[in-house]
Image 1 (cartoon, rainbow, N blue to C red):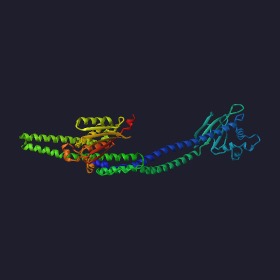
Image 2: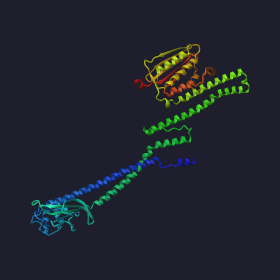
Image 3: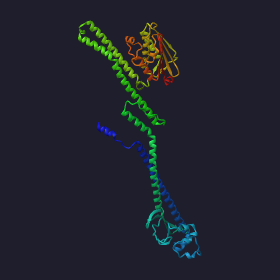
Image 4: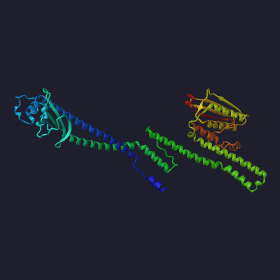
Length: 500
């Protein structure tokens, strides 16, 4: 027991924190995936753009150099690249590099003047005949090499190689090799990573904070439910209920269902306590009577045949009364639970009423029974057939028992749109206004002395009322003292069954 209590006292993270962490983790994972995709896409987009630039520069150089008719040399290369004739710019024929002054001549030359771009031209012997940067670079290969990322002298960039084919002779006259540095790629990667990392931290913090606030708000009813259950656990006899929620969501449904279950549980407990109390109270008298007769027989009565027969007869009568009493109390207890065991049961109204009516005509031939059946067709009522019969038998049996000189019982059956209406009228003793408010109480008898002689225990009407109420019906009584009583019963009609 101690171990159980200690285990029960251990608590982990609250559901609010778990929800906040879960939502934050989810957002973190989603943002991380988004950041990775963004990073990869941005870098790939940048690299693709630089690859196109490198390929475009190489193609433009090859296109210009293809105007030559013989193996390329420095002068021929320079003239074709700058689109110069023999007389122009002769001062630059002796140069081996293209400097800034040529940038105003041609956009292509301007591109070649960028530090990130290195153009190398080779003759057929793979000798370098022209370059745009100071550093030399050996020819990688003589066949076509598409832009490929490589590391050259500590610098990362695209290496592109393309043979030069003369437009006139259609022969290869040299090779062009370009190196397009990706100088800003590492910087872009670093800045993008830092930016995404900072944004991810900010999103995680904000999502955790907002997740905690939202979870605390949405789970507040659940916390109230937990506190309510804890109060009930501490004090099962308390009348505490879950407060009504106006959120119109699943938690509101849970609160409503919880209150219904709580009311039903308390009702069952009250029924059990009432049952035990009633049994102990009502069985006390017959048990005392039987005990008295047994003591009498034990002392001296067993030797007297007359006393022996009288005691046995009285004891058997009390035992019979006890059996009837226990059965009625069990019926009453079951009547309070019909919504659990017989919620979907139904029965035919005309058939049951006619059957019970004919049974009473046979059992009591000295009574005049009349039946006014206003039902044009059979109606199906939402009640278990045995319970329907039991209600009619109890009411009609009381009508017979409490009739006086005028031995008549009238039964009327009619229906409205949703309810079956039954009226059972007798012309007997009647019930006073004071007693009308109590006749549905357990063990209550209008005339206790007479009820004892007629075998009543005062449970019949209590059973009837409980059955009718649990089937969502109604029962009421109209009575005038010394003139008679009318019991009016209403039972719900199964409209779906009627439509079929």
